[in-house]
Length: 168
Image (cartoon, rainbow, N blue to C red; front, top):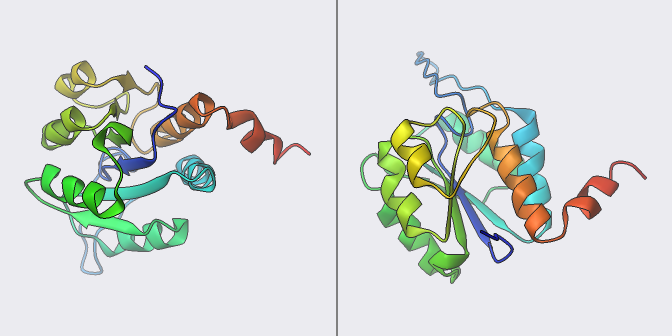
């Protein structure tokens, strides 16, 4: 399946951009993000693909990471992730068919079924891996998002151009 038409990538956070470990503290939760994923997101944004985050757990660290990466849309929903996703797609005027979503657990099923292209990290729940169009070889929080970004860039014919920026 080609992803050349994708204009919006929506990412779950815990288990996709992170390894899913949740460490609460008095200062807020602690999360680790992979730098390879961050560069992949930046390259995708430079190719005019909007990137958004959709998380079930509100977090200042997620807001900070989104700001650092220039991600303008961070959505929160504990139970119904499809509602906020539909709202964003409507707001941006991007058809569901031109939207990709990466998730890892049962609460991501409805969005994964609704979008034009669905993806999961290698360590996603079995029900998710069986339901999606594509599964990364890397687990969540360890480069799965980067793999997806590269796939999208390759299908758009933009990967070599993006890569060449760092070799010339």
